[in-house]
Length: 88
Image (tube, rainbow, N blue to C red; front, side, top):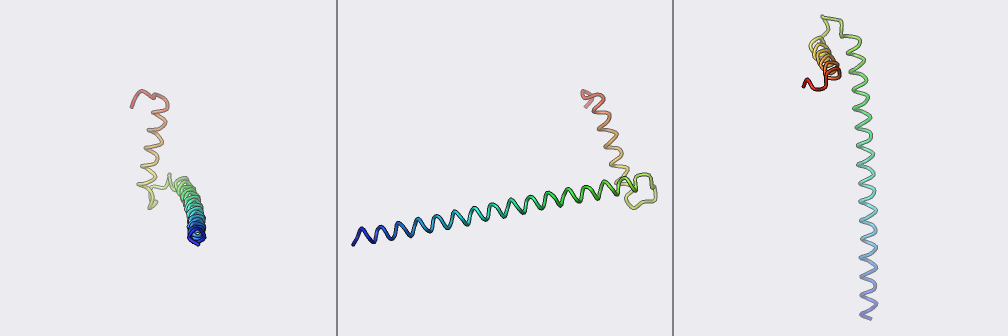
């Protein structure tokens, strides 16, 4: 009987390990799904931001005028760096 008890305990432990592995896999997939949705959300926010920039960049009265000026300065700096990469 001792062997049968050992076998039952071993089987129960193996079943528990399988269940835990499934739970971890589901949790991992859920985290990946959440990360993918968050990345897509960031892309959508960026698209809105680009649209606002292009609509407001020439409007000195815009509530986004400072941000648009900052973006324009950075775009100009990027162009300068691309023309002369050693000039950092």
